[in-house]
Image (cartoon, rainbow, N blue to C red; front, side, top):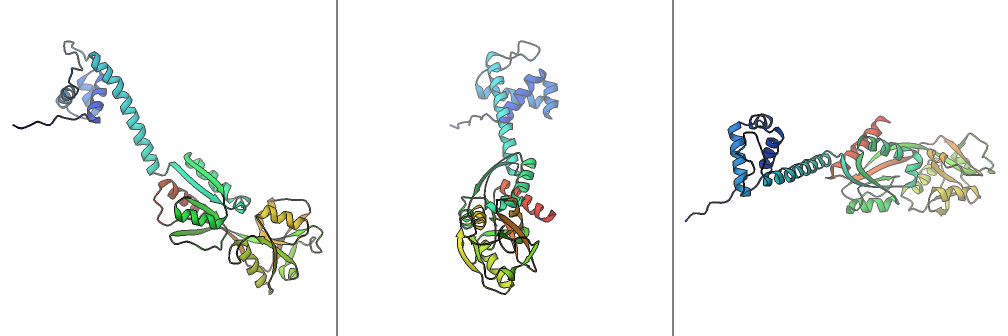
Length: 305
């Protein structure tokens, strides 16, 4: 004896039924759905077979619903609305228009204005993407991006780049020197770095081949001397305060001029080619559409700069 498999309820059944109820006419509903009227009639009959009860009162000439039909129309309308909302959300995520991005940054990225500019622009074009920002030392950023705990980072090269991570420089800034206002050269508009060869330089607490520690060594070597580096500061706010009280001087990016503290001056360097670079870091094989959209946005900003 053969067993006939029962038909299952599908979204198209609900779409056909809702369209019929809204139009109150088989011919108009069929035209709205883009199908033939006999086909619509058959699908409604199939739906009634699936649910096991009449949905239309066929004693009436016009389309009239039975009590089960009224309940189905109410529930089917909700299901279709929720389905359309879910599909729309999925498509927005697929286009990178919604979702979540975790972003790390070094504090000097905020001083440069580039972080604010890029994030503000991205939020305007992608208002449904949730951006989560956390200030983080760049070596930790690289580690967490590689491990998948962080999506994106703003860093100050040079730094060791883990396998699978790409970086792109989005800003190159000239170096300035931060001096206490009582320094013998504090009144100058530009300084040759060689004039500061006997000074003590303060850098962030980093290895010699990383970030501003590396920048300081490179710039001083270019000027013909090996810098005396001590002590080390936790961040640029701390370093600027240390300079202000006379513990040493520091090479800083030009944008640090926005950090105006009493008793400190920022002066441009002459004959210096070393720059402080701001770069973005991200996974080469990124699969998240929102993150890919954010990477593209930052690259576009870099090209326009």
